Image (tube, rainbow, N blue to C red; front, top):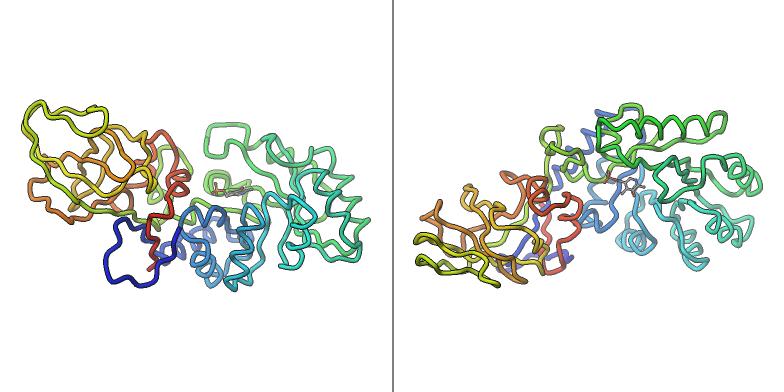
Length: 367
Ligand SMILES: *Cc1c(COP(=O)(O)O)cnc(C)c1O
C-alpha cells in the first residue's frame, strides 16, 4: 500500500487512518491489562493501516515491543528508523535470515526444533534475543508442552542467549463460552511452573475476554486498530475507536426503467423505476466480490445497498433512498457510521481480512 505524499487532488479510493484512535486503543489496552507489558502486532502492514506510521505512533504511545510475522516486515521498520524491540512471530527460516535478524537486533521466536538447530549454527558467543513458543492446543506453531525442560537446557547451553519469554497462542479466545481457552492457559502455566522467564498468552480476544490471559506480556493486534475480535460486538462496544475509514465516490448516476439490469451477469433487475449510482471502487481495491446485493455503503450519512455484482473497479448502489445524491459524493465502505465488523459479516469474513485485503491501489492517508 502506498504512503501518499500530499496530492493535488483527492485520490480515487482512500483509506484514512486516524492515528489518535490508535493511541486511544493503546490506552484501552493499558486499562485492561495494567500490569502487563504490551507487544503490539503490526504484521501485514499493520493490518493494512501502514506499518511505519503505526509503529511510530505506537512507539510514542509507549508500547514495549512490536511484533511482525517475518523478517521482511521487520527490515522495513528498521529501515524507516524504528528503534523499538521487534519480535519475529514465525522466527527465522534460514541461517541467512538469522544473521540478518541478529544484525538488526530482532527478537526471534523459536517454535520448532529445526529452528533451534538452525540458530545453534550461529557462533556460540552470539547474543540472541529469543522467545520460546509452546503449543498449548492450537497445533499450529510451538513446541510440545512436554519439551519445556529440554528447551530450558538448550538455554543453559547458550549463555549468550537472552530469554525474552515463553509464548503460547489461543485457538478459541473469541468464543467466550468455549472452555478451550482456560484449558490452554492451565496447560501453559502448569508446564512452566518452576521455570524462569516472562509469559505471554493473549491476543486481542484473549485480552478482552479472558482476564486470566493478561499475564506478563499481552500481544494485541486487531483491537489496536479499533475493531472487535469478538463475534456480535463492534469496537465501540469494547471502548475502542475504529482507526480506519475507507472511501470512494460516485462517478455515474443512472435512472433505470422497469426490467433494466445492472452489472455483470445482469444479476440485479429493476422492478420499478429507480435511480442507481456507480462507485469507483471494486475488488481490485479490496472490496470483496462475494459482497451480495444488499450489503450497505454510506452516502451523505445514509445507508444504501450495493446492487448487482462487485466488479474489478466499480460497484453499483441503489439510490432510491437518496434522490439528492450527486456525482463526486463520498461513498464510505467502512468507518464511522458503518462498522467494519458489519461489512465483514456481509462478506462472510472478519475485519482482519477486510483490512489486510486493501490493495496498493488504495491511497493510505494518515491524520
Ligand atoms: C497476529 C498475532 C497476534 C495478534 O492477534 P490479534 O487477534 O490481532 O490481536 C498475537 N499473537 C500472535 C502469535 C499473532 O500471530
